[in-house]
Length: 247
Image (cartoon, rainbow, N blue to C red; front, side, top):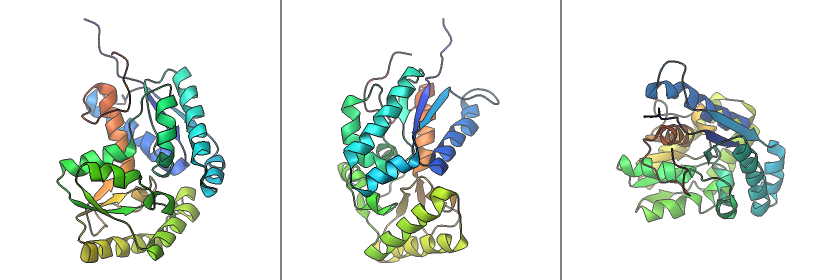
């Protein structure tokens, strides 16, 4: 009987910090499914971040999708079996991507929602760029599962967006940013009765976690990495958008 070969993971990268954390998590946690130093094969493609930002800033989500698809094509040629994108914001373009993609994807929002459901959370606070929290990316998925959600207020959205885009994506981690997230999450707990918070920017887990947040956290970056790892070795329960090749 032939030995099972894990599937080849393709990472469509956007910002460097989020993509790096996702990649590192897959590598570090891959050992639990095999042996020391082992993990599934991984390929990553990263278009210049500026190309994404310029299209996002002008609300050109079809243009964002074209960049994602270009990465998908390159990763398919590199031999990837399925794709992930460790960036919540550009999942706003996913509707333009899925039907044309050469490979199936794990959707970051679906992965987070599945974890929230499994852990019994019923009302989630959303954090992330204003492009994300003002979108339907998470609300549409959470609503299907019967999970309520709360967006930050206008002032919180603006400051969290500034912290992400001016600091976190550049690898700048300030104590003041941690305090701001703690204050916002604490308000969501006390005023909005949230029972968990979605860290809906893949850089947020670099400064916020279960140890310093007023609510349990749903770390979108590591959850996606773990779902990809489990999918690659054939143990993942999360549905994938499309059909995988036979192992």
